[in-house]
Amino acid sequence: MKFENMPLNLKDFVVKTVDFHHIPVSEDDEEFMNFDSYYQYPVNVDFGSEEGLAENELTIFLSLSSNYYDDVPQQGYSFLIIVESDFEVTRGGFDISDKEAVAKLVNSGLALLVAQVRGYIATITALFPEGAYYLPSIDIATIMETQQ
Image (cartoon, rainbow, N blue to C red; front, side, top):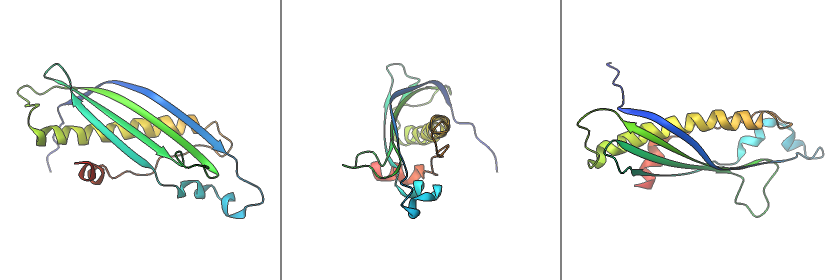
């Protein structure tokens, strides 16, 4: 199998919004004493993209939240993070008007963003009493299909 480089270079990664809360575990509630129970809440994913003014620019926005928009968040971690990344399309002759080609770039860009956010979340939550929260695996292809 031949590896093909994507013509995509990450130029900038900016955290636009970050809101993390640790809702303490009640010592009376045995069900929540296991740290794995913190991963029971689904992660909500939303994204968008736009081509830049220049022919070789692509911006991707990503929003991730879990246990956040509930009226009363449950025990564990509650968070919202919104990030924006600017990418440079490096391959000459790339047609930014080709929707299929842009979709491939967005797919690759989202994978890079999720990896960046995963480390960011783990770093922030490492300071919380229960330790680092590692963002679960996210199926980028399925997310892209549902948003098309």
